Image 1 (cartoon, one colour):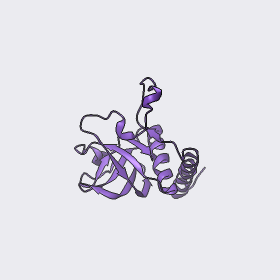
Image 2 (cartoon, rainbow, N blue to C red):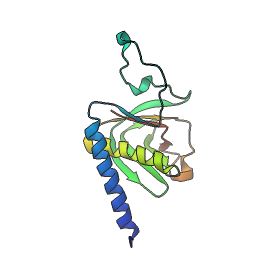
Image 3 (cartoon, rainbow, N blue to C red):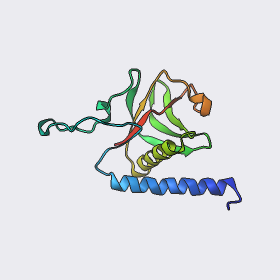
Image 4 (cartoon, one colour):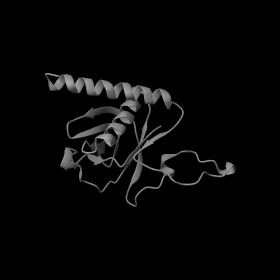
Length: 150
């Protein structure tokens, strides 16, 4: 159907952009969290949750950081976001495209944040240097464990 890879990439990025715009429009005041599941009972009315991603249970070594996205990209083997901020030299956060559904959810949130001018909360493990397997450089990139659109 498509004769060139670049046309396919433009169409895929265009669709991700449109999905991102829709997600940003729908979630202007709500936090959207991908990559986490919450199965706890509702909090009592006197102690209403504030939906802060930092309150979500994270693996022992993982940490939440705030990212102002300045570049979102989709490659054949990964999607990534580059942040204005640097955390001990880490400025890129990536996710492999081996799980296409999860990569699409992450890409939608990442693109929405960049387009709408929102920040992201990203959960990552500073010691996890498994990213080079899919193009995430060990020197300045870490795998994404979860993303929240702020």
